Amino acid sequence: MKVHLAVDLGAGSGRVLAGKVREGKVELEELHRFENPGTSLPSGLHWNILGLYREILKGIATGVERYGKIESLGIDTWGVDYGLLDKDGRLLGLPQQYRDPRTQGFEARADELVGNDALYDATGIMPFFLNTSVQLLAEKELTPDALNVASQILLIPDLLAYWLTGELAVERTNASTTQLFSPITNDWAWEMIEGLSLPKNIFGRVVESGTLLGNLRPEVAEEVGATIPVIATATHDTAAAVAGIPGEECYAFLSSGTWTIIGCELMEPIITARSRELGFANELGVEKTVRFLKNISGLWLIQECKRSWASHGEDIDYAGLAELASVAEPFIAFVDPDAEEFASPGKMPEKIQAFCDRTGQKVPSTKGEILRVATESIALKHRLRFQQLRELTGKDLKRVHMGGGGIKNSLLTQAIADACGVPVYAGPVEATACGNLITQMVATGDLASIAEGRELIRNSLPLEVYEPKEAGKWDEVAKHFEAILVLVK
Ligand code: LFR
Image (tube, rainbow, N blue to C red; front, side, top):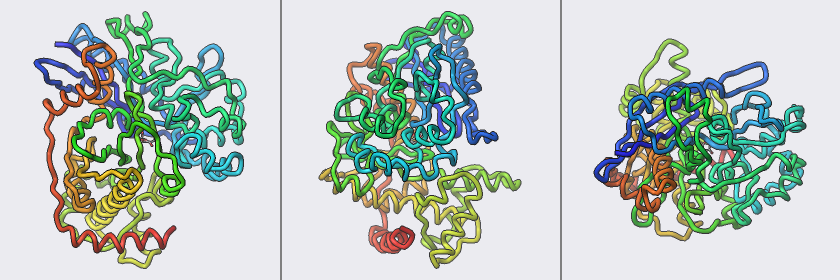
């Protein structure tokens, strides 16, 4: 039996998992789980990066204790966030969270400086408040001290891998989330970097997913109990999830977590006036693929409702919340899950109610109603994006393959099948960890290709099929939903 470790950090929690391959099947085992709460300091919203690093070490040590030899390990996290290093490799300040409000107004500033259209044409990435480009611009104009002396930018998984190995590199799938990397030249988008007056010298070596970075530093190896090769896996969690979703036929992938991300795997980017208008991004995937996709604010709304009620002493688990939503009256009102007011944390139930109120709809009053409105609205947003994806790719998409924690919410998964009018193949829940692991296994020669890895996943983990129901009803409510989108535009 061979064991690889996947470190998978999300914007709420992180895990270290062991992927064990025996007799043609992969088994996942959670070795260590920890919280990753955003922390508010006088300087804004931050990640506790050193805390995360310590938790990762704990998880690796558990893996070594349990299995002795570890073939390799790889880290994936959310995209876009970064740390800056000085010339001696010291971290300059505590990395900030993409939801930190400092970026407000800086999408418009980027537009002034280089033009959002030009940025899209050069990078294939849409203007979005969280892009690294927007964050760096805000940092440069508001708090430039660190940038002035920085000699290297690393994204979060690169930074953690640097601490583990001493090797400096930015992995390509995550580089593509910065809006500063070109999927056409396969290099940093230098013209845009110059146009935004960002320091060119901080953008260093980019490596393909599946690159061996090196072994754990001797001090780290001593602490965890073994020397382990570290691989720059598909370090962007969504790239890992897409790799780990074993799609078949002509399918759209859907990676469902805090964000849900819907898209298609392509061999070439689609950068047209229409794709720009509809806001689809060309992020990069494993084996030189393009992840042509759109973010939808997914479980975030539900997670934030949960957090808000818990802070008032009503801590209901996700199963309990789903139960409340499933017995509430359907289709009483709709929100745009991607409306600006929902992007920042806090007061989510009240924000949903205020949205319904200001758009002249019935205001949901119970927890069940609020959650039902959120769930159906999220599903309807998927429908819209699914249809746009069909139009932009010209593909006759026959099904949705959905992976990630979101599939545990069967009300939402069924609603997505109903709203899109195609079957949803749900699985695996651990798509991200699976993609992280198979990318490593290809790198170590244990698998020939990602296709072979997907076959391994298909043979090992359950897939559940949700057939679409009540098509007529959803066609009708989609009209109301889309009218609300127009109203708030
Ligand atoms: C999902 C994700 C999305 C990205 C957002 C911010 O976890 O990585 O792909 O758009 O987080 O990085």
